[in-house]
Image (cartoon, rainbow, N blue to C red):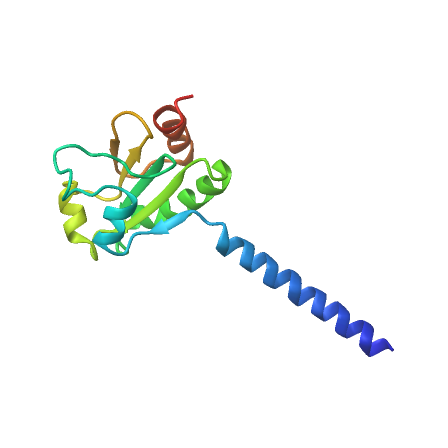
Length: 148
């Protein structure tokens, strides 16, 4: 009888751990863009409309141009994850590794990292170069993306 109770407690603990892990992974909106085709489908097809940036998404977004070797990029990454959770689905955050996607970095003229492109649903996208604090990013999101 005692061992049956212990088994139930262990199963409950494992279920809780699995559910927490599944929830964390399945609801994250930080999206890595790994191919040009994915970029053209989700963000902007620059081959069809090369003159004007026309964001294709359903929610405002931030595009984080980064590199693994970049110290400020590594500091910014967890801040962007926190912000994504705080804004709870109101914005999307995309990440593009400029070492792997050199052509996308070239399309945007990326020369310094990190570079963040803020894409509102209406209006012109705006680029911010260099590390930004969480407070600065939240203010930029509110003003540029959510028009508060």
